[in-house]
Length: 506
Ligand SMILES: *[C@@H]1O[C@H](CO)[C@@H](O)[C@H](O)[C@H]1NC(C)=O
Ligand SMILES: *[C@@H]1O[C@H](CO)[C@@H](O)[C@H](O)[C@H]1NC(C)=O
Ligand SMILES: *[C@@H]1O[C@H](CO)[C@@H](O)[C@H](O)[C@H]1NC(C)=O
View (cartoon, helix red, strand yellow):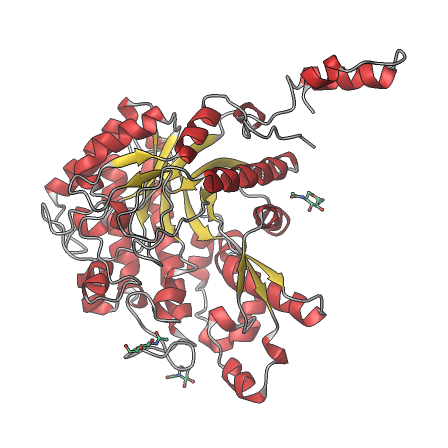
């Protein structure tokens, strides 16, 4: 109810209650939610990642990542590559202008390891250094904060070939050296660092189900892999990612943080698992899955070790954390990034037949909890993730690093300006986020996925997430603002969250 409506109402008898309501409404300046209702300094932005939008795959000294190899072998969902994609490498100035016109506070992007350090270690590529310096300077000149992910899936192929990439312990040292190149060269201007994007998903896609590079898996968890062990390798890969993260944070804190004054964290996929039925078995399965996905990293980050439930179920297959690493891992974050999309309904696998139960004795991480998957979108699920982080992990500072809704174009070149469904989606999640903050969660930022259409890891160009569209049929990769970009920009300039359907605050 808006203050104007109340004021226009005929008040039958002098009513203290109505007068108080009127005062309360006036004190809030009306009841529509605006960005001023979010905490002071709350950052609104949009994101991309290097492999997904940069293009220029073989230009200026960049060498292949495992994703280049994978897509060139024809394995992406739609057979496409990201050789050109949205071509941000050549259009970054235009893209920063788009962000500026939209009034974004911040841009979340990632640095391409094979562009900056093409051989994985050693020589820095001067052209790569120049590109990221230019992009960062352009952002800062327009008053837009760079929020930088150091590693977002695009591992240099050469490290995969040499020692199996994230499956090799050498990854920890090479990653730390590469992260130092970033801190040293960009840390004077970058104040928000993310070490890794979704280390709780990369081992599942790459070393468990095998549908993403390096395509490792074992029957029955994946069927088309030439090597791998889904019961052991995902845990080993995640262990190396965790240690690499802790090592980079420790280095940043020792050598750079005091003088550069930045913050550092990591970003997890924050799906939420809900029981499919109201049986205690399904409730336990959902709890297990949240533990196997969120707890896999949050428990060590907060307590130094893997969750007791994982340790008891996975046993010797779960690498143990050395006492010397425990202190490095514990507390190794200033904030936690959360990528939130959907709710997964889970059913207890204990209800399965004997054949499946045999497999689950030696299970992979993704299927510890369930055998049936249903994905649903519910804004309250974001609230549940934040509530869970608050209760279980000491209410960490959180940045919502990804949240968004895809469109499924019928034709590859289709241009769609009107995406009212996307504005509606984002509005409902921002309302849920607002409620969580009022409830005590320490969320300090929100980034729409994504700024631009690009190559999607799961869908190629078959799903469009952009506030701004890209005409992939045009050589110039023309950008165009969708209606959601105009809505977001209006909101960021102080307009109502739901200009057409005012939101009534609780
Ligand atoms: C495995 O590969 C075959 C042949 O390329 C393909 O038809 C099948 O869909 C693949 N199975 C999975 C689960 O990816
Ligand atoms: C995976 O490793 C475990 C533990 O070493 C072993 O028991 C299991 O047989 C292996 N599975 C495959 C498919 O190699
Ligand atoms: C708010 O906190 C209460 C009490 O802890 C909890 O029951 C509720 O689910 C929370 N709601 C949200 C949106 O976080």
